[in-house]
Length: 219
Image (cartoon, rainbow, N blue to C red; front, top):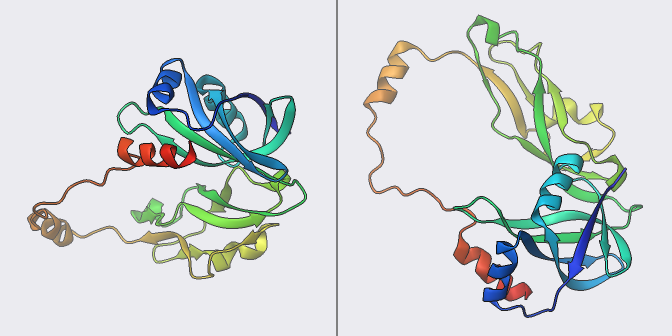
């Protein structure tokens, strides 16, 4: 069952200062577009948005009430404040419940790998898979049972493709989980002796500058 959330229509071309004021009041500027929805700027309560996402999940269907109409939507994109950690902008995609969507589903491991009990290390290089599914059938996550994995074993998309009721778009060799042997003391020593790369800087994700440019395009 879809979660309900109310939105308020706002004028297009909202100045940056007004967007900042909206956020200061606890609102998140955004836009809705897509199936039977004319592209419309809006605002939603950040508290309601967080509550809705907790209830429905990142890919969950939301009944968005706007200007006397209700749209079935999913959150297609969002920007976060890199410093404060709150929402800066959100995009809602109105969808046809009869059509399949392409979404990213989280991969969760289930159980304790047999190889882990022997000192092996469980690696999860890819934590999402891309799937094609009807909105009403979007899973909370794709669960992968790792309990039978010994050291040297792995699970790729090809191993679980036939165990789910939806289409996985990634290739068969897309690695999900592996169990490797523990590092030897010699390997650990080599890692400690490897000098750090000089001049490397951390990547900034969702910076204010990037978000502002998105808002200017949307507004």
